[in-house]
Image: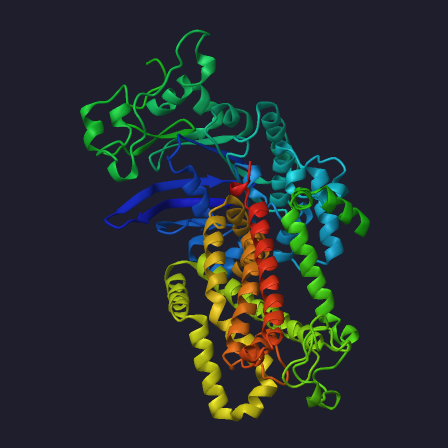
Length: 322
Length: 307
């Protein structure tokens, strides 16, 4: 049994005039200790997917169809009380900006032990002990001093380590990281990524890593999902997605990496922008921007087809260069 | 530990601003003097104005010592019943401040809880609670208080009223003004709950009450602090106004307002001090509190930094 299995998930936003579909027919699995990456441009539905797993999509959004099976139970059917026993206890989340995710008026220690007290019957001293151990585990020097400090006394990288420590403290089997390094500078990014890798390996934690950085995906994950306009367009082993992608959108993302161009040359970009949810074109959502577009793309939504380890939704699916 | 905290406070921007603001220092000093003198009134007052055996009606309307006919026993003169005005003012200010502070605590308790719930829950609950606040605000504090206190006196008699006067005033002023807090808190909560740290604690799985009181409330404290000083001043003024109208503290246990009122009858017969001196005491008290409120607002709201 997989740790997490999302089946045909559909999320809608009930607006005044119409219902917008933010996620359609999203299915994926995360095995125990597996690291899964989700890539896509802004607005592709990556964060919505993450929040819907925790049942935390804010109004007017709601899950309109599908199942989210985690450790054998369907999270979409749980009561709010049962759900808050899962959140932070069995599934933790790491956010993008550590400047924003820590409460400025509470000490690091308070914010860390809170998660423990919310889910476990644990004494204050034990909780403090656990918090200090976890701080040491994410390589924060002089953890005992940090315990009593406020977020503003730490640097950005340190704060993100604290955020990760808060996510880890209840020893959850799954962590969702929503662009955990976007707000940090490059050297710190690498450190944080190494740290997360190490933690996932040593404690067999499953990881869903949401990012728009393909470099991070290729380093960190075993499987990867490419999303476009609320739909998974390609899914497969990370090395296959990086090396032999089939979907023209994935090709476009790969070409847009700065490493693909020589200095002085213009960066490649995918022409056009992602459509707004209210104006997704008929047929394949990517057709207005697609270099391989054909008539069928404008009329029919492509089904998934399996090629090797990858699953791709494209009428024109073909490896690079063919 | 305490010393460290104190040093940290002396190092803070708050203390820096305070030590550079003459108005704030003077206001704070005067307020401290008021607090110390009023709450030690039984120790320092030369007479006990609540003790009828210590009062001699023959001593009534003696002017302050520096005027002709003054008596060295009575520094600020006496009122119409022969009570020492200085002692009566000390006790009266104590009552005024007690009512002001307790009424504001009640306002704050009601307003903060309601504002937090309205802001955090949103939707229908928010609409419902804020409409109640609007309705409450559309009745002026004095009107509500006058009607309520007058009806109470008529129903239960003056004797019971005089015993419960302090409680009643706290209750009425507290209930009449809670929407001020509710609105301020709600506005800050609306801004705070959009921030990511609230999402983060929801993800941790904390329950709503804990998120509201432990995480959001401390982040809304600065506007609360600012309106609190102003609200205490307002509550003291409301109490004085009610007492002046004869609906507040009874003459046997006068607050500043009822003192001003009791002297008012004699102001044209020349005994101006019974009204004017408590009046000045009241005005200074309210003034320093408002000045301190202004100072707090300037310091705690970075958008208002004066160059």
